[in-house]
Amino acid sequence: MSSINRALISVSDKTGLAELARGLAALDIELLGTGGTATALEAVGLKVVRSETLTGFNELLDGRVKTLHPAIHAGILARRDDPKHLEQLKTAGFWPIGLVVVNLYPFEATVAKTGVTVEEAVEQIDIGGVALLRSAAKNHEGVAVVCDPSDYEAVLSELKASSRTLSLATRRRLAQKAFEHTASYDSAIARFMDTNFHGPDEHGGFPERLLLSYRRKAVLRYGENPHQAAAVYIEGRPRAGSLAAAEQLNGKELSHNNYLDFDSALSLIAEFTEPCCAVIKHRNACGCAAGSSLGKVIEAAIMADSLSAFGGIVAINHTVDDSAAAVIMKVLKEVRKFDGIAAPDYSGNALAMLKEKKNMMILKMGPLTGHPPHHVTVRSIGGGLLAQEPDTRAIRRDELRVVTKRDPGPEEMNELLFAWRIAKHIVSNAIVLAKNRCTVGIGSGQVNRVGSVIIAARQAGSRAKGSVMASDAFFPYPDGVEEAGKAGVTAAIQPGGSVKDTEVIKAADAAGMAMVLTGIRHFKH
Image 1 (cartoon, rainbow, N blue to C red):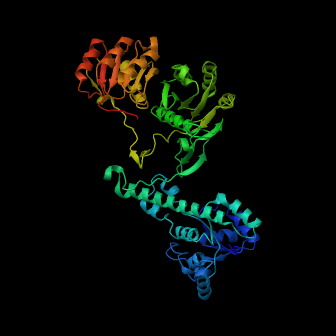
Image 2 (image 1 turned 120 degrees about the vertical axis):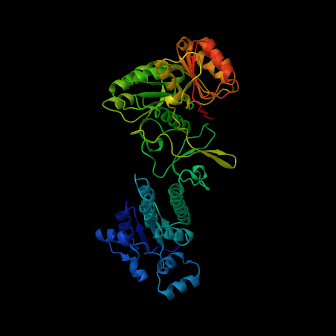
Image 3 (image 1 turned 180 degrees about the vertical axis):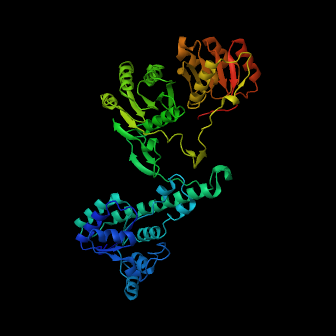
């Protein structure tokens, strides 16, 4: 590649613009600029050839047209190894442009604002910028394209070290990045239009083409197992309160499995507005509690199954103050180790206390508004993806149907609804035993429901007596209820709908249990 003599700069995000332009000017690279970019460069004392000087036209249509002209695109697209192209450029009086620095109108930032109108969004659809990026990226054999301010320093360094040239490897990398950028940009526009032009009722809320655009945040140490490679990708603008937007305050980098466990924990505590703490191990809760006292809630959740809490993830939905941090440090003496803690914030000396555990990951979430997840969740299958709505269905008391001879008392009903919210977040077949707004036994992931009941009851031990039970799906046979009755469970909540519902209800009556049906299933596969 011949040395770069001329750079066209047209940027919406002016981060690092002045430093880049000064560096280019110091290398005697002529600066061409459009509109506000040219004005910004002139304001810092740099000489700029404005785009209208090249095209012979001022900006048209309120700036909608300013770079869509042969004088610009021919200067970018002309092949440097084709004498005919270069002769045509010379005859037309156009200048070859060797470097294109462009980033686009902030469409995603605009549509992320509350109450943005379609008209406002449409005006943030960049046309000329996308065309410039595609032209330069297509002709990367002879032109370099830069769309990310984070690349400015490296590009300048290479230009300085290589007599104003960039290697083919660099140009290829930058071209690929430009096409990724425009693809992501178009995906965001298409998603916005699908939502706003069709609405959630057409095609079940699922577009004909599922356009996903995420940027790589980090390459992870490994995946689920050390022999698997892995990386984490995030939305272009992660939602506040989401895991992707969390600030890590302490500890080692998150692993693949840490991300999954943190996400499961945050989804669970988002069910509650009152103080709540959940302990997650291998994507399942091993303890969860809610109540009025944050410290008591934290201790109850962790000690619900202190053996399983070892190496788990702790999530708390209220700010951790000094007293709450002291509780965590106290129970750690028995549990010995947590992999990580997530909370909206940490006040006073709480963070300093928790940082005494140097390897413990500590995440500051901010207000927990990023859960539940966005309107579609996806999972890969061989050759494709499954997409679905997230399970955000909440049950109302007036939807519950008591089917046993005995009605649950007010306290029992509160306990049942508490256990029901947790069961939604346990891998099926899910059974949750709870007492005093805290889990005492959890059975999950079994291939038969009675097996989950037996596991939950065994884990609860004597605590099962006087507890309530939640089941994420119906009981296909009465054996699960019979086992719960033997353990001392007093009430159960389940969807109902089994062909053997009558027998299941009879088993509950025989055990003196109250049973309510929800009519809603919460499988988690």
